[in-house]
Length: 219
Image (spheres, rainbow, N blue to C red):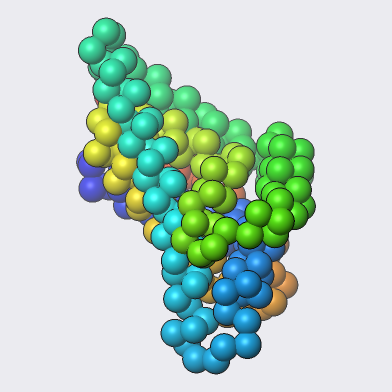
């Protein structure tokens, strides 16, 4: 069951990456290319800054997962572990299902927050702040408001274990990394088909949300 859960986090990260992250994070992919790649040629010069940027994001995700798992384990000391795990897993599942259903119908209840903070304002501030490395840039941007990320953090808290929470977010972050690395090379191609990838990611998000609800009920 634990291995299946990790596979679920990886799958969710992959789908969210190609659907949600392409739209929200594409400006930052362009920023990394412009700032740290420039006119340098070769695959190493192209991919290395983007790999470092994504490793920075994943580090932040792992930290958030560790904190979420630690909080869950602390609650375990003063409460009923089974009840806490059930509640966190079910709540995370409901959040993901509602996010996916509303977004699919054209309404994103996180849209204003994500659009205002995640796209324009943060991009301008990052340019003024000028982090000295792509890893540091990813480390900072990993804290950006993101609906699916919130749901996954809640789901990682249901593990009630710091290490498992960290690993859950590691798998999720690795899944999103594939999309953003692809965007660094095939950005125009992927953005032109963003609607398809977004719809597919929302379907997978709803399925994974249902899986978390089912897992919580079975605990």
